[in-house]
Structures are given as C-alpha cells and as structure tokens.
Image 1 (cartoon, helix red, strand yellow):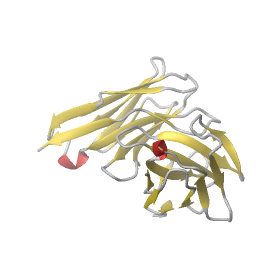
Image 2: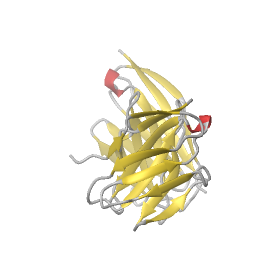
Image 3: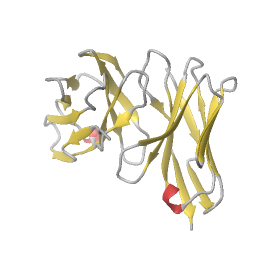
Image 4: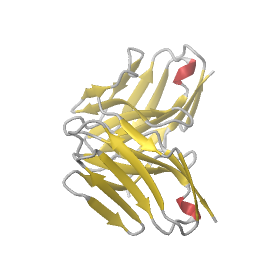
Length: 112
Length: 112
C-alpha cells in the first residue's frame, strides 16, 4: 500500500535556526497538509495545499512558516526562525479528493 | 471555525468489554467524521469514518454512530483486546474546508 513518507524522522535544531521538513505525498493525491502535535496533545492543523497554492491555513501558520512543492513529488514545510515552542511532531498528510486522509510517520522537531 | 470536543480523556476497560468514546462538533455543516488510532510514537491511522448521509457504520468490532441533530458521533469498540490500547482521535470537516479538526484524544487502556 502506498504511504506518505517524511524525512528526517527526528530533527534537532537550535532556537533561531531555519529548518525544512520534507514529505513525499502519495503519488496520485491532490491535497496536501501539514499538521503538528505537541507531545501529549491533539493533532493541530497548520496548512493545506492544493493546485500549487495554499488553500487554507490556521492561526498557528504565521509568517515564520512556509510551504512549497518544488517538484512533482516533494512537499516541504519551512520554519524560518525556530522557537522553543515549535518543538513538536510534524505530520504531513495527503488525500485524493473526498477520500480519507493519510498521514506520514512524522518528523519529531526538537528546538533547543 | 469548527470545534470538536471529545470525552473521556482516558478510558480503562477489561479485555472483552466494550469501549465507547464520544465526540461533539459545533459546525452543523460538517459532513465527514473519521476516527484515528494513534499508538505511542506513531502516526494517526484511520480506523473508520462516516459521512453525514449515514447514521451508523460498522467494521468488525468497530462501529461509529452519528446523530446530526445533536451534533455528536461516537466510536464503539466491542470485545476489546490489549492491542486496542492506544490514543483515539475523532475529527470532523466541512465541505469545501477540507482540513480536519481533531478532538483532544482518548487514551484507551485495555487491561488483560
């Protein structure tokens, strides 16, 4: 069964540094998402992406965040200047139309 | 925006007993209600979903019921097994706004 793949699985960075989290959605999916989950808390929506543009974003997705689909397969989340409170598990997800949402295994981001 | 409330936050049952987790949603336009199971350190995985044109859906030991009038939906797990132990999240989405809003999660512990 095809899967959403994310790299790296764990990223440690210093406060103020930029990080890029990478995702390869399932190949025939059209809608792409980033969610985050702070340890022990619920899954929170960050941004959705469709037709090469952001279709929706939450209050969490402020100016320090950006997303990009640089080619036909990758989908990236960039955090420009990381803060301690950005430490979380970041999940990429994708779906085809009205089908179910498929999550990747996540990237655990630790900001020190 | 949509708000999803989930309870209980923790649930402990004996193996073989049934478990019920309940969620309420705020936006009457929501029409899609999935349930995800998340094991420790892993990604959320879809276990069952229901759309607003259906009142109940069953898949082996798992069933979901939806009451559109009351704006609540429930997950029922029968004949629980230790491997059912995990955190379960409900979610909801409205047409056009394709992002899921998650509940806060229920930690289910099945005691052998």
